[in-house]
Image (cartoon, rainbow, N blue to C red; front, side, top):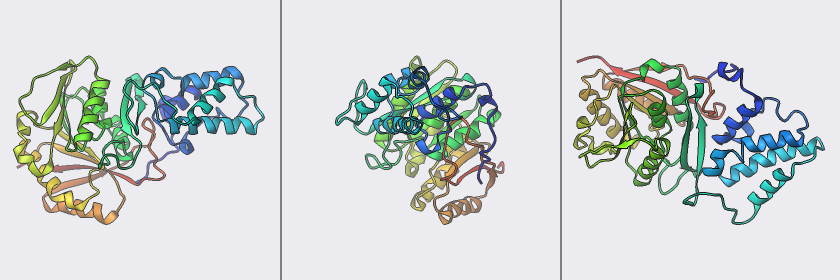
Length: 352
């Protein structure tokens, strides 16, 4: 189900074009999808070009936690091309920045540079702050696809933002958390009693822990005797955990000692039918923990309709009830609705 992208978000009405472009740049919205809000329709003078640079490539967040060099260079190239088409004079800083990024071995001010890793920054709706994520720009990195934020995770965040009461104050378990966009968003903005973010690849878990610490620098460590829980923090309002949760061994996880979930969330975990038996076993286990009172919110990129249908049929056979939700428009998290068929389901089961 496609969202209606023609609807202008209410919270865009009072924001300047520069602010709206800055938000899209910070989270690395593909250049071809950036909505410029008229910013490049007229010749920008030097002061306007300087303001654009200050809000993007020289933004304080980007200076401390840089976006990929390739993305920043492509962004500047788009501006330079447009200005050239209008015979506008280029700001010296614009050209200096662009040329520096094209130089072989260009380095960015990372505290601890990691090859292939860079940051994205999501400015949250309604002044709720910023989520900064360190992730990989590669489709597959270190043998896993979990080191970057996928379209379905962004669509899930949009869904969450429009259904606040379903998540606020709840006990939440996230399956396949990846680098943590959805889980960190829930922890930052919805004050769950506890949220446990889980994955099972060592590189992904390492990145997830780093991103949780980055976004909650003042949270206090909490002791936990579960060896699968590698991080447990108390933010004052929420207990946040990072857990190594292998679906094949869910019964040995001692998950019940940590959380009895009200809500399970997941994005882009239904893509490999060989994982379905373990995933179904995990859902059965978790629903039993909550006496079938929890619900499961699943966001999927429909890459193969037969694969998704196979999983949905397995759920139906296991007595789960499936409700397909309307997909919210891409407003805050800037996902590419034109290229991805995102579907969101709320999955429940009759009380035992």
